[in-house]
View (cartoon, rainbow, N blue to C red):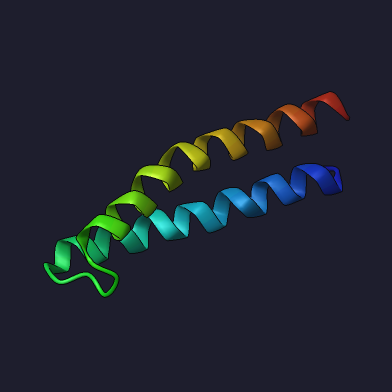
Length: 64
């Protein structure tokens, strides 16, 4: 694994944590930031997880 793929993987982990946190906040009924900002964080973080994970795997495979 290269440092670049490590950064992509770390970003993917942070985005996944944000997505899970947003799901819990929305399911509680009263999100701390409000429904709209929490929904936006969720909508942005889910595709970001996939994109960053894909970029990490692609970079790691290219530098084997």
